Length: 554
Image 1 (cartoon, rainbow, N blue to C red):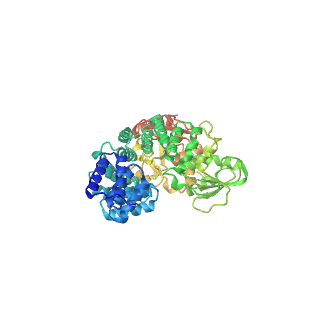
Image 2 (image 1 turned 45 degrees about the horizontal axis):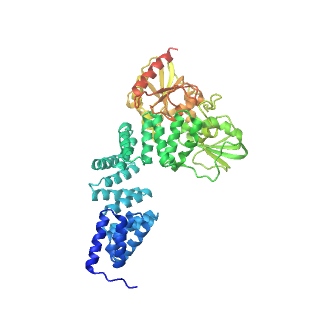
Image 3 (image 1 turned 90 degrees about the horizontal axis):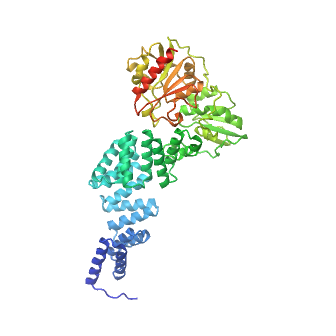
């Protein structure tokens, strides 16, 4: 069928009219106008490109992609068509094709901001962070006055834990556009990572006031509120995140941690099991073909309990091992190497293995920190029939005048909360001045050097040469009257041995110590001392000094 002849003047007028409709935002009318022009001037790359742009804005991505493909077949160097063509592949989920198309757009125009931003985010989502950073840096250089460019760079640097660069980029983004919600949210996340809780909360609140649909920002806000001791508000923040994203494992796990801290353990255990889906714990999940043991008696089956997280966690839940052994046919326990001699000395029919070695055959398995959930533990039902950790060696027969006290001030620096839970020997030095006491350092690692570096060797004995493993440390503890320690493995060792132990806790203490209590359902011989406000070790140490004076005079 022959098309009616349209003059060049009429085509020009129709083209300008379609452009005017498009620029006015009258997209449906503009699409009809471009479709008519496409019929009248088939193969015109300007018509096809503008039609694709309007269809993209209308959400008709498939039609936009098809028209970009037509335009590029006629003129392969059309930058705008190439950019839409790439975005269409990304919407379809074809990452490889989208990547190739964005790269082609950047060959045509190396500083094309839309392609740089899209390709940077695409690489970020695929975990290719170095490539993403390079593209985001090019974007920020190409669009120095565009807030989204700096926000993209800041978000990628945050994902790479490069907090200085992330903060600089995000502050620039906020400076350029104070109402850019994503930049505010990411800046709040950076400040949360820096433990700057109040400033973080300010930016997170502003971000959610601008856009309440950001689940990640609600989750970060909850974390800041937890650290400020505002538990109920934190729960509400995590619930808001889950309302927006029900499968958000980090928010579910964080909600469970607060619920555990409030003592509602049986309610919290299902959420606690979500830890293996969180960004922090997912890399450590064990891939076994065997199913998880759910606590059901399995007298004809073999079970593997495997350690996770810290050595203190393993010692805390070791109390369950004899109970497990009673319910299964054969029990193997994989633990950290330093704990093997200690667990070997426990009562109960189970075989202890060092992590990193070979594993026996097993029918069922369970991560160690899932034991409290499997046994339905609440604060009122923590298993305790007496001390369950015992030194495998004879006691150290420590000599000293008055009360013999072990002291620990720092934990594993790799622990995400170590900055809050650990302190310094200098901060605890007032304890060393309490008369009638002899102090012995049970501090592992380089932090033990604080004794000599602080000129305190005359007040506290460095026991590191005798602390080859936890069985050796247990032998030292057996000869002490009191252990004073931060929240670290020695607290669990002393508690499991039934030794008198005073645990010095950060204001935002770990869930296992609950809230506001000075005793522990895990360890009847423990006494808890808490910071009254975040970071206030001075007041805590003063309280411990007073208590120590009273203890000495008993």
